[in-house]
Structure formats: C-alpha cells, structure tokens
Image (cartoon, rainbow, N blue to C red):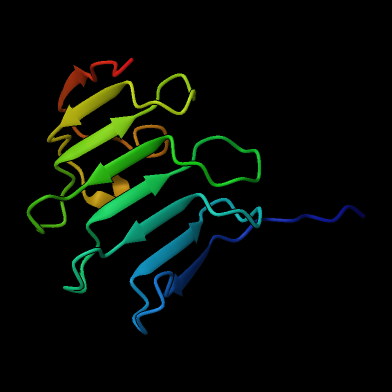
Length: 123
C-alpha cells in the first residue's frame, strides 16, 4: 500500500506594519510551506493594491513578478517582471487584462498579454 499526499494551498491574513489591520494576504499556493504570493492593501480601503509573486522554489520569498492596481478597480494596471531572476525588473506590462491576484504570467493565463515594455537599466 502506498501513501498519497496532496499538498493543500493555504492563505494567511497578517498585519505586517503593526497598525492593527490585517492588510497583507500571504498565499502558499502549492502547499509546500513557503509563501508564493503576497497581496497587500497599501491604502487601507480593504482592497489589494499590490501583488508580489515568487516563482523560484528555493524557500525564500523574493518576488520576481510584482503587479500594481493603480486605480483600485481590482485589475492589474502594470506588471513588472524580473525575467532572468537577477533582482532587477526587466519588463513592464501595461494593462495585462487580469485581476491583480491572477496577474502572475507564470501561474495563470494572462489575458491578451497586454503591452510589454523593456525597463530601462539604471546602471
């Protein structure tokens, strides 16, 4: 008889800035015990404004994709992507046509793909 283990996704609401409000949602989407996504309500209106996605399975949360909802409608307006995982965002996609939580291009269908721009180097 073999054992079968199916990982379960978990979600945790946390107060990272200590103001008494749980403004950040931490998601372990693959059930490995490591955070894969952080969604945050930065303006306190009860809706997420920023989503950060870690697509490297190394046990450390370092976002390589960050999506921003600029106008509070729940849709990502800009998605920044560190394509080569060097810590520097390489592209910015304007209006990818997805909800903020679904704007990770490596995990979910990303609509029509939006308009991709190269991010100028600062060095």
